[in-house]
Amino acid sequence: MLQIVAPWWVVAVVPFIVFLIRPGRASHAFWTGFAAIAVLWMAYGFYLHFISDGAMSDRIAGIFSLPNGIILLLVSALVGGLTGGLAALSGQLVRRTFVSAPPKSVSL
View 1 (cartoon, helix red, strand yellow):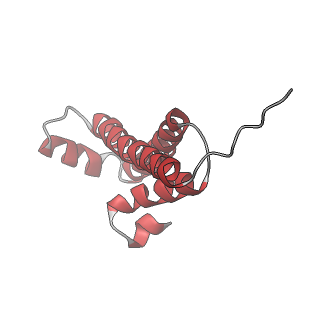
View 2 (cartoon, helix red, strand yellow):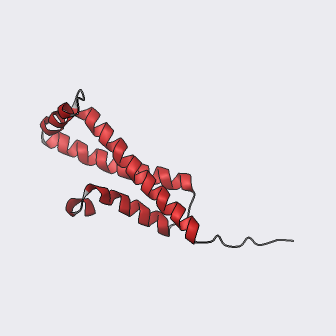
View 3 (spheres, helix red, strand yellow):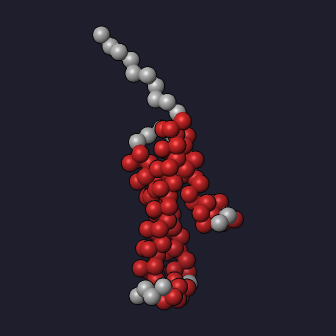
């Protein structure tokens, strides 16, 4: 919802904050952020592609010398996914830096 009124890079803020608060593994944080943003951008891109009958995405793909608009949607999903994944990973690593792990109990 923030992306409607904010710049494109706001998609990096949400995964960062989520994994700053939520504990977990670094690999899980990256792949969750990657998948969330990639699927979001892909779905919205396909929506725009189909309501314009491919005219808009095909023209933009021509600017980047891509063969068609579907390839453009895949590339944009990859870029968005990397942005979300790296933001989530950064949030997880910042959390790990400032929040100490709970002490392990010793059982006898």
